[in-house]
Image 1 (cartoon, rainbow, N blue to C red):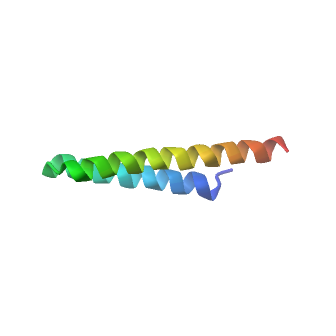
Image 2 (image 1 turned 90 degrees about the horizontal axis):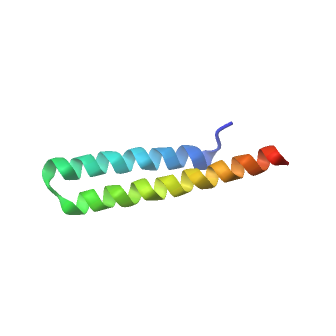
Image 3 (image 1 turned 30 degrees about the vertical axis):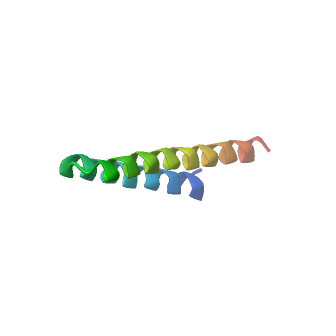
Length: 59
């Protein structure tokens, strides 16, 4: 079962990829960096959701 942290994490990763692609297309270093940081934040949030889900299943 997917929880809200996992969904939010995946959404943030997608948003980061889009922002990074826009930065690559326009040559904007700022957008590229923002996209990378959002992707990382999304991975962290999804990982938190994964751990929370595993803990719930273990109990």
